[in-house]
Image (cartoon, rainbow, N blue to C red; front, top):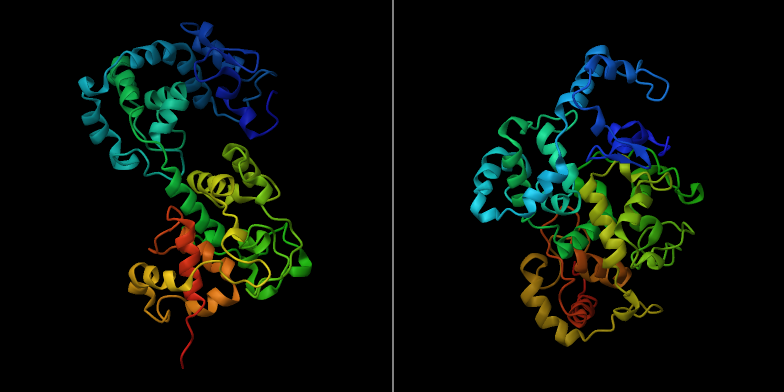
Length: 374
């Protein structure tokens, strides 16, 4: 077995999306137009072991696909390459057949990458799914529309946009803050298995699942030196992971050390990975690490605050936030800076990360001057 996981039991893992073989294992293309009952019997042998895993009707369906359902996806891919999407009118077919679930831009479903990205990176897989539908889903199978229609559809899908990296990074920053709030998911009732028991406090088990709880608002690890209510975990931060491949980060997030594959959708994992890889800011450039004072100009920041922030937070910083923004900015400026850069979880606050960093530090400096009034 080439892959020692549940994926190793998938037919595609051994035989490929083009049915030509994978991992050095022979494909199934030479089994076309053979006897389906013989293929069904083959599925029960020692090499396959599906006798007890699949019922007789499922084995026969799978055998009928092998014998009669394979399509030359490489040929369809070449046809798609030669197709001019604008002339194929596939946009109309997509808008009526697919957009209700996937959205007109192909990015509505967070359980998967945007369709445009998948169609460009994994065209054979997309062709197979377009022809046959999704396992366990209600997506229609388009094979009766003809190979040429499906090839033209692939050509159109390849024109759809990829994920917006800036938006993904900002969303990942909000997930880093509190993914349970941001995704509207059920808050965890048990502490994260990897969270140090000495730092765990029973009244807030869900807090132990927040990325910031272990890795800190400055991303250097939570040593408990900030007055943010966090317990010292002794866990190192994520600064060393800046610049890592997001795909590798997604694997790490799914691993037994984090377990986020069980609680986050594909796109959430992708956004969080993009934040770790590309979205971390050197907080020392904004905030003096010893004093916690912003390095910005409070006078300049006052003008920016009045035009960009006061509409929601008020001129004195008393509105919207759970705590007075002046108090947050003084007690935990790293927290305030993170939220300014990425926005709040499950909130409409804009992410200012594409704004000049000096503007961020200036606004933070002004916020640190705002005083609570009783």
